Each structure stands twice: as C-alpha cells, then as structure tokens.
Amino acid sequence: MTSDPTAAPRSPADSGRPGLLRFIPRAHPISWVMLAVTTGAVLITSIDRAILPAVLPGIQQEFRLDDAAGGFLVGLSFAGTAIGGLLIGVFGDSLGRGVRRAWAWAVAVAIVVVSSVLTAFSRTLGQLHVLRVVMGIGTGGMEPVNVTMVGEWWQKENRGFAVGTHHTGFPIGQFVGLLLIGATVAVSGWRGAFLFIPLIAVPIVVVQIVLARRRNLRAANTWMREHDLTPSLEENEVAGDRERHPLRSAAAAVRTALAERNVRLMVLANFLFLWAESGVTAFLTVQLTREAGMDLATAVTVSGASGITGWIGQIVWGTVSDHRGRKFSLGILAVGWAVAVAAMVLIHGPVSAWVILIAWGLVRNSPFPVMYAAIIDTVPEGASSGLGIMIGIGLGLSGLVAAPVAGVLVQHAGFVVHYLVIAAICLLALIPIRLLREPRTA
Image 1 (spheres, rainbow, N blue to C red):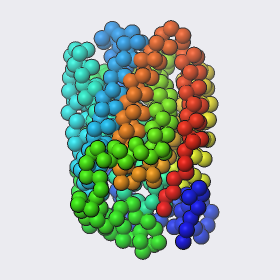
Image 2 (image 1 turned 180 degrees about the vertical axis):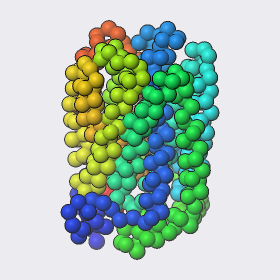
Image 3 (image 1 turned 180 degrees about the horizontal axis):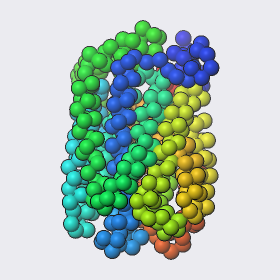
Image 4 (image 1 turned 60 degrees about the vertical axis):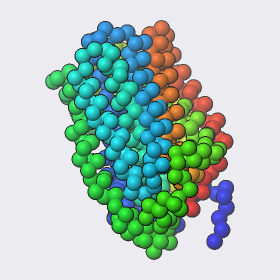
C-alpha cells in the first residue's frame, strides 16, 4: 500500500478503538517496561539541569557573585552540554544501534555521578567552574542516546507518544526533584542538592543494562510485525551485525544527519526553544526571592511548579503529533510558549507564581519530544548523532548564550524586558517550523 509523503503520520494500530482509547497505543510489554526505565533515566537529566539554577542564589551569596557572574556560571554547564551532546551522541551511533546504546548511556551517567559528588565538596570558584563543564558533558550525552533508545524499542507508528511519554521525566524532575532539593537546601544548604544524582542514577543504569538484551528486542519486534506495525530496527541491527550497518564511523553518522534538511531546521528550532527555557530557568529563583519576597527554599519549590502539568503536555502533544503531524503540534506550541513567557512579567507573589508556572508547564517541555521524534523519523540510522547535534548545539550553545544574556538583561533592564525578549525568541521558532517537511513514520 502506498502513502502520501505529505500526509500527516497515521497510527494504524489504534484505528477502530472507541473514543480516547484510540490515542493510547498497543505495544509489547517489553516496550512499555523500557519506556518506564528510560523515563526514569531522563529524570536524572532533568534534576541535574534544575539543580544549579535552583540553588544559584545560595552560590551567589557564598562566592559573592553578581547576576552577570551567576549567568556565566550557568552558561559553563551548557558549554559542557554542547561538548557532551556532540561527542557522546555521535559515539552512541558509532558503537551500534539497539542494545549497544545502553553502554554508551552508562558512560555518560558515570561522568555525571562523579562530577556531581565532587561539586558537592568543591571549595573554590575555580573548582566549581571546571566541574560544571564536566557535569554538563555527561548530561549533554545522556539525552540523545536515551531518546534514541526509546525510539528503537517502539514501533514507528507510535514514536511521538513514546518519546513524549519518555520525556515526562523532565516535568517530574522539575517538580518532585526541586521539591526534594528545596527541602535539602533548607536543612543542609546548596551543596547537599548535588548528592541526589548518584542515589537515583546507579539503580536506573543497572536496570537498563539488564533489560537491554537482544532477546528482549527481538520479542518486541516480532510482536510488532504480528500486529501489522513497523519495527524501528531491522534484524541485522538487532543482531549487532556491524558489517551490514553503513554507519560504522562517527563521521559517517554526522554526515548522514546533517545532510537532512529536517535535522538542520530542528537544530535551529531547538536552539530557539532552549534559549527561551534557559533564559527563564537561569534567574527564576532569583526573581522569586527578589521580586516575590520568598526565601530560597520556598522559591526553589515554587520554581518547579511547571512540573505539575508538564507531563500532560508531553504525552498529549507527542500523541497529537502522531495523528496530526509534527508541524501542526510545533506551531501551536511555539505560540503557547510565547504567551506563557510573556505572562511571567505578572509574577509578583506566590499565588501568581504558582498559577503562571503551572500554566507554562502545559507547553514547557512539549516541543522537544516532537522535534526528537521528527529527527528519528528522518534519520533513524543516524538518530543519536542527529539528536546529539541538536542537543549539543541547541541546548549547549543556547544555554551558553542565554544565561549570560539573561544576567545582563535582568541586571540592567529588569525582568519585564527580560521576559519580552524571550517571548519574541519563541515566535522566531515559527520560521524553521514552517519550513519543516512532514516526516513519514512508516
């Protein structure tokens, strides 16, 4: 049967199911278990990225840093993210697809765990600078490899749902993680916050490596074929047949990814969305303590309010993109982002902060799984490299630029100008979204 390459993706496995059930895909139990484990994995990334902005006022006080210097410190984390996303993301493809990705991810986690513990015991500003770069390298490599993994353990027809659900780890970490960090800061100061990562990371790494076995992946793929669905990997890729895999080198993987127009456009859109997110989060607790009159522990807790509703947006918009297309979802999300960020100028107390940040959660993380699914659709054989480029350039460079720029704007122009500039950046993302070619999922 032929399909229209310009048509929105369809999800044939769900046809004929009544009501909202048609939006909940069928999948093999192993696919569901891998989705749960990888969601826990992205939770680690979420908490790591939230720690430094959350405790930034405490670090500023201890090391006597102004807002511009605080923005530079946050930017160093994103510099490491750019390096990690590019190097470890490409390494994930070079090592091999399927079960081999679990080992590439374990390397990234090891970097994060070690640098997180050392950060908790750092005594000089220079040590803190170096460790933020190193920790950023680890988290920058975790996401592209892990997102690609979940895409490879699910059928192509429901990839948007799988990646969207996988990314609920971000809003969960942004709320629950910050809730725990806030309690820790109240008891032991900002240093204790960095000891959370090892406690949750090591068990997840072990479970993921145990689960990522070829027999499990074959069982899931067999079920997909029996139910007229499309596995993301061919049998030779499941078996680890390196001789038949055309992308044995990192350079070839990068060339394949960059040759695709959709990858280049999504790198640009991701850069703009992440500039906006980095700009908001870098000084959110500073705004809540300075403008809304909260103490640091309360401000850290409130800053995670978007996580309460974030999981809804992740699942809903990922699923909508499976049925209505990636462009449709991303266009709405860009406008929603601009409106939510502009509303942040109205935060003047705890009530307005809770209301606006909870509303922001409905769109905050939602563009990213849709963009990731679009890249996996376009270049499945080089997906980790494509996502590594996207995350490395988008997250790394946007954070490197956004945090210092935000520091300067907040210090010299105030929070109103700061948020209006970010809202304009969100609207600029409509340009690459408009130029995106709707990818075919099957």
